[in-house]
Amino acid sequence: MGSLSGLTQQICSRDSVVEFPMTRSMYNPMMKKSCRVGFRVMASEATGSEADLSVTVNGLKMPNPFVIGSGPPGTNFTVMKKAFDEGWGAVIAKTVSLDAAKVVNVTPRYAKLRAGANGSTRGQIIGWENIELISDRPLETMLNEFKQLKQEYPDRILIASIMEEYNKAAWQELIDRVEQTGVDALEINFSCPHGMPERKMGAAVGQDCALLEEVCGWINEKATVPVWAKMTPNITDITQPARVALRTGCEGVSAINTIMSVMGINLDTLRPEPCVEGYSTPGGYSSKAVHPIALAKVMSIAQMMKSEFADRDCSLSGIGGVETGGDAAEFILLGADTVQVCTGVMMHGYGIVKKLCSELKDFMKKHNFSSIEEFKGLSLEYFTTHTDLVKRQQEAIRQRKAIRKGLASDKDWTGDGFVQESESMVSN
Image 1 (cartoon, rainbow, N blue to C red):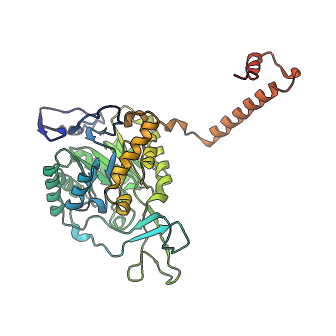
Image 2: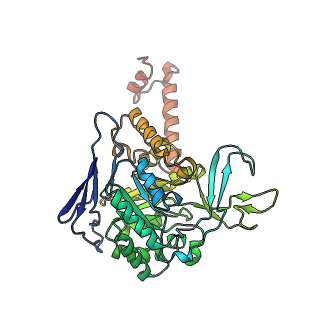
Image 3: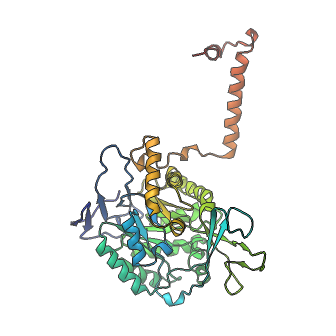
């Protein structure tokens, strides 16, 4: 965990103490350990033998690892307040930019995929596509609501998601204005797959490592709070942009954003969905169907981080198809510190966090884990190459044959394996 620099000012609430550093250190461009991680929220400790869901991520302590993902569930003060009241560990607001006037959304902008035939209105929802853009609300309005949220919930973690055009001055102005509201961290949207790339924003940056390195440099030169870079899955090797983001100073990465998709064609009208005045455009795919893809991407990033950034307090936030505590446990077992939920909230409401926490606690009790840290990344060691899988299976087959051969007849006894062959015929 990062350390506080300078004196601190404490504000006490009913259940926790909030420490604000009186002075904040800037990020060291020599790539030494970040000193931006200077804000801490210390929640009350768990009592008794109950599993402790609290996590500390880049110096930010959350009561649980469940985070509202950037999107409609964080689009204004009312809904973000609802999220805090329901008990979410943190909220990432919908992405903002300097000029909201350039953002024009359409309706309808969502389409669902159900586990059934094309166009079925029955069956479980397994996929969700959106062609929604970033926030279309004036930046000043969003900033005022960030301030209000931090005033009313000083002990809760609020993260601003930001995106700008390819312009250093614009990026740094946006960072400065957003940080003045008191937000606890920044998530940089390098991954929106639709609409924004047309303006050299979103995935247009996240898919170009040279461009990403330059923009991350602008951001980390200015930012004084922890920075997470949100990764696009629409790339051959997601570890490459993740590595660039961390090497240029970001404290963490989030993965994954939505997958570029065409939800389907209406076989009655022959028009694509979602249909806007008879037309559509490829959009971002989310919900349960993307969960296995997200797990693979998170696993790859976690392995890279473990290998190359073990000496830094870097974080990983898993995103994709989380609707149960088990879904979240999978991300954590693959190295995620936090788990984001966006589409799940749109489908099930903000109260789903209680179910998520309860189910995650049940999982922890089943395996006698008392904290998230105890099982974070525990499953990573069980991934290997296909070539290694073949070798492992061949060796296992040889061993099984050796055991069976030893039991066949007296002529099969050997000198070298005598003890093992004897043991193979013991019944207890």
